[in-house]
Amino acid sequence: MSGTSERTEGPRRLKVVVADDQAAVREPLAAVLGLAEDIEVVAAAADGGEVLAAVAAGPVDVVLMDLRMPVMDGIETTRRLTDDHPEVAVVVLTTFADDESILGALGAGARGYLTKNAGRQDITRAIRAAGAGQSVLDREVQDRLLATARAKVAAPGPSDTAGQPLPDDLTPREREVLTLIGQGLSNRGIAEKLFISEATVKTHINNLFAKTHIRDRADAVRRAMAAGLA
Image 1 (cartoon, rainbow, N blue to C red):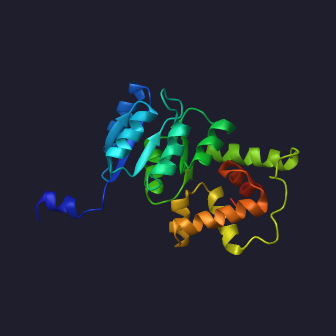
Image 2 (cartoon, one colour):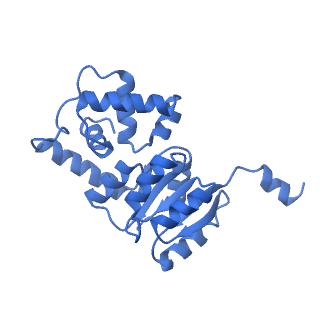
Image 3 (tube, rainbow, N blue to C red):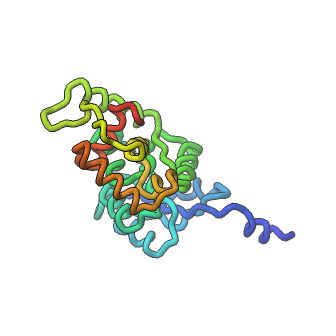
């Protein structure tokens, strides 16, 4: 059997877009990721507009997304991808690990969040997990989310629901959905995990938000962590 046929019969390579406004970061990162046997870097983008164009030209499985970019930042780009291309997973790779950035990215639909302290193995692992519908948060991000959740529980504001117990009328399925949102899964990831359709996931989320008065996905992440579900 020839080498060409062996590659053809091997596992499908994940098609990845690398997005960073700095060429000195973007190009070496794309080159390093391209060395992995199961990853193919199909485009390198300098801003959110280029990301959307690359995904539209597709196919793309995962976008490795910087947050601070010109034209359209990473959070807005992630939100548009989640709305228009829910099959594409986003893994954030950024120097920023503040609450606003983390919750904004996860609320927009990112499946992974890494800081630029992450090594090549961490990044490739997160890309593979995202491509499989799973989520990966690095330790610094997890610690930050836990600290934020604990602070919210300890001193909830007048409009904050994080410290309130979950209502008794939540169904087991709604609790499962809240748990998976807290773990950073997108609607598609939740559907695949629970073996249900994305439309059914949206129905559960609408019911869940109505019962708990959760405002948005970032609020749901905080609520799940405060309740010990994530």
